[in-house]
Image 1 (cartoon, helix red, strand yellow):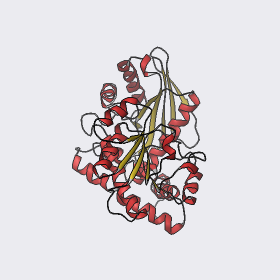
Image 2 (image 1 turned 60 degrees about the vertical axis):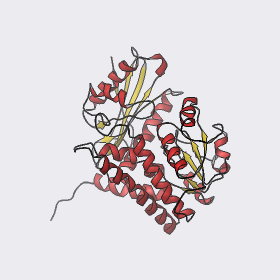
Image 3 (image 1 turned 135 degrees about the vertical axis):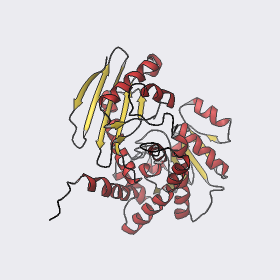
Image 4 (image 1 turned 90 degrees about the horizontal axis):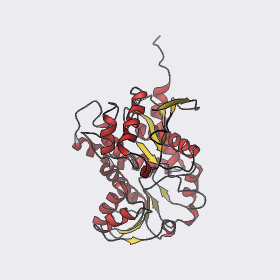
Length: 351
């Protein structure tokens, strides 16, 4: 049985904790802002070191979704779900049945979707308990669109930073080659890039090895690889005062959420003259694809066209950052806030 606890977190519209000792999990749903529409964000399943770490993750991720959806021009707010459990010790069907009931508990304030360690099949289980779930029966797996968006952003960044119209011969170091990182690696390899890979998941390496050729380094060595582009496509917080001095790249452009440990790390990258493509701008392809099934007949062509526009968004952010002498992450934040904060203000009556 799910036991729900409302948490009062400053700056968030609603944060709910769910405990279920019988199934063996604790979960949180954080709704950051719904000024533009219902909160959309995936359901991440992870075995966290502590409950505090899980709560911190869901808060950061949900806030990031607000900025991502706003910058992408979507009529959606930001939210996220995280589940703290050991997937090897729980019944998967039972787990996602209860997660579906948790989502239903919020009565449409939050729309869920797949994420790290949750799949379309899992979302089909969730769908039996609530209508507030995307990717099931329409847009499907969002990872191909996330990878497409990252690819288009890389093209824009390479054009600006390196003055090149193609990627042939460039070296790309990819951290994490799962659903999105693996697809990105395939696209870049097809364009003639030299690929260097690190992933703690051996299966991801084996799957990719059957498709393309690449050099393999350890999870720790990836930060020291001499490359043109470093693509973080795993978990967040990896760009910090320890890793940034080690980087030997011109561009950082990957799909991971919350790549910067702090906003100040954007300044550190700018001082090193490394072009950072803001994560919530570059990885919006998946949520753009999902948005194309909400309240309308899904069209994959429309989703692809909208995702391709990510390149234009990145170009705009880079140019504004250069004009204003600011880190790209700060400029991206400002552009997103202009949209959802404006909508959050009370409407004045005409006089």
